[in-house]
Length: 235
Image (cartoon, rainbow, N blue to C red; front, side, top):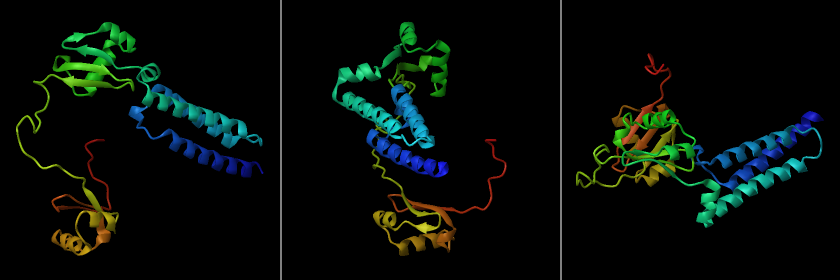
């Protein structure tokens, strides 16, 4: 009976967790705040306790999960509606370096020492902080860098070049199966696809691991390989 009880409470906690997650919204890990992180861990812990509870009273952890989730939703609503509320709940950006000046007090506010800051600079490709015009610690804990004008890569606009806008690449074959909707949206049909495959020496769609089609009608084909890459330089 205990196994059966754990089974249905686990399924119930998973269902509730899924619903609450959908209500709370999706965020990338790099975008969540410290409160979101701690809140997510807490909800997960309560869900685990609810799943393994051998008593019939699973209402208490369910209520607790709901309260935590709706608190997160309420905070997100306040962040959207109120600038003052957003600054209070999430904090605001802190300028660490600007125009050759490194602000020690702001580093202290950000709970960063100089070595941690230099590590972040190197991780972002700046081994010489003299190449940085501005460095800002964002509320999500990441540091944004603005390079000096002489150090940033040249853009198409800088070179006054006229280029066409790129569009999404369509996956027309995945794991040996034709994705018909994507093929139609790319402006082609199966006859065109088979003709293009034959041009590249492919007779069977089943032998194709992935095939993509760009806006110009160029088909890129990646065949299924039955072996690993030898002599991996990343080992």
